[in-house]
Length: 240
Image (tube, rainbow, N blue to C red):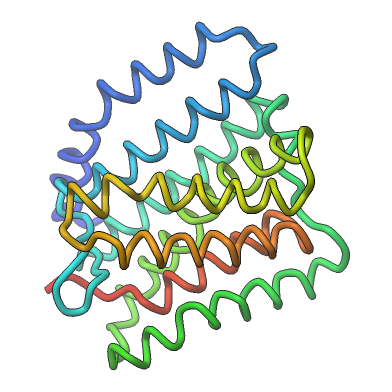
């Protein structure tokens, strides 16, 4: 990894470690029988981890174009790789929560293809409207790692665990709507405090959440992750 990426990642982790330590302790202190509380703790920890990217200058919302990520591809690739590691830890360390992460329903190839198509349906009109060009290939590779792996982690939490948990207590469509509402609400601090984008971000994340929830309902969590990752991959651009 080029040395220029290390100070960015160190600064980000320095901000995060106290919070993550407290969340880890909270998770450990919560009885294993309280799987719903475990899901809530994981969601809160993820939101803090994601939103901390803003003051750490890893991404920026607002301006032209409205969604931009760090120009160093190694920073993005490292964060994406970390997301994959966290997915492995969740699968191994919290089997009671992971049981709700239904990976696939039906044909896997069709599910991934339809997930990517759903992501393009969300992201392509925005990309065309913004007139985004192609970024350099090294940056695209690093960004693809973050967009696909990072959003897979987000989908496992919101669509896999939360939506799966809600399905144990209500109808599948009501659970899907609940996960979409939670997804949009968990972008509220980012939209209303960290940036001044406000309702457009809330509306976009609600629509995106609904689409991903519907994909998860029909095809499973990994196709929903493909939808989310594809959409972000299409609308993201490098920071100048």
